[in-house]
Length: 307
Image (cartoon, rainbow, N blue to C red):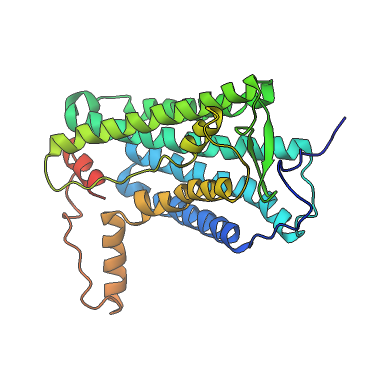
């Protein structure tokens, strides 16, 4: 029985060299950024009182940071060994699971956050009912369970995992030509499209409702599109293009805590007050609402979307 991960298809005897700097930076920034975000959320819990939106943001930081922490040490081992360390099959399957679970969970949590803002703004009376905190907990747990199931399909026999260029990461075998590999790739990529379209639609409804002065962030198609293209046999190969797409996808986990937590107005306001007291901020100023303002469903939603 073969106990090592499959070799990189189309590889040659020539030595492949890739810098360890990009994955090293992603590992450091992803873990540190999400840890800081979790700390900020915990320290400010008396202020936000774990409203549904903040619980979802906490779950997002936990998922992104945990996913990077769970798999990137394995990636760095390959770079540190100058690619002489071979992934055993269980490690490759584990790496593939984490690399599929993390973006799927993150995308679903962001979709749930969009739905939370959608209901809060369009249906404030239905939103502000008892039991919403419990529903948020159930939503988070359901997202993690569903993502675990989808990410485990290749472990159940529907498709397989494969090591990819430059031999530092494993993922679903979306470059495979077998029916099972293609079905698994279609399932993952189509689900990604559905989540993306749902998130965009919800945000558009909110933007149209608020009409003016609203800013919306874009989340790229990245990995879902290349997976779908491979499954549809429109493109072939296993090389730098697939590695670049993976790095773009992981960047979501790096920037999420800054977008949803660290750069929010209330956190910048706290930073302004603290550094202003020490005379370090100069003329730095933020036009924000009063810190004593009570966040009604509508006002809270508008503040969340504006960040």
